[in-house]
Image 1: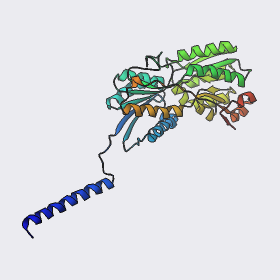
Image 2 (image 1 turned 135 degrees about the vertical axis):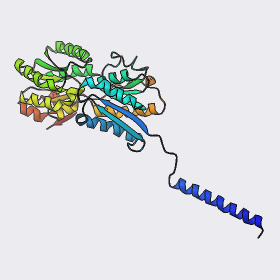
Image 3 (image 1 turned 180 degrees about the horizontal axis):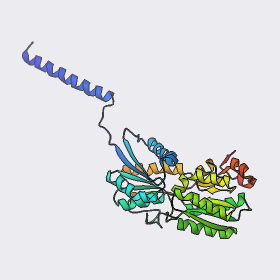
Image 4 (image 1 turned 90 degrees about the horizontal axis):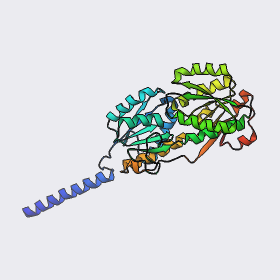
Length: 334
């Protein structure tokens, strides 16, 4: 064998080994590592009461191919119902240089907006985003914010109608209001319009945080209203079980804006399904991560609303819910 043939044979062997190694790497799925997406998640609520909503968002992300610990990192911050903490939490999250911020409800969105004008923000369950200055229009929000609207003004009017239908004798309704939430001014206007049409009288009881609830409960007991309705709010949502228990103890029919309120003991609830909104927010996150501009993505409004009636609570209150209301219910807790 000639020397040059040995060289050619050795080179061929090396080439074969290289090709084989590349094939083996491909067979084992070796490929460039995907970028880890970093999302900041800001909520005015607490981890305990908000857990199922955060889980719904993660489920939505999972369905789109994002998995925590692999290609997704979520930094969570909760204000625990103390809205004054939100600006600092939003600033802290912004300093982490996230790819995107998910802001739960109006108060969190407002804090995120003040913290950054460049990081994309996907808001969830926000009422009247145009009036609050979060968007120029629903069709083309502009700026760095888009997401899911809550339509709570319409919801509140329907809540009063359903409460009146379920308990016709209840004419004096106590409204539990979080005075630290600016958007509640809009809620009060909508509630008063519906109350006037239905011939109901509304009594306002304001709180600033969870520590004020006992005082509000005492004030409510002194005035003896016929029913109680907490306005849609992250802090009041977090205290839903406590509010529902007060209603039963005080023999007050109650209605809330989220199905969870009826599930923890409230008499009724009516509104959009928050968990579905958080799943839907994941689709906006995915679009933005793939290059879409928040300002070009239309704000989505809820299209499905559900009525939940708790007959266990009705029995405890000595109330018979009319069949005309029960047949409209999407869920009846027996």
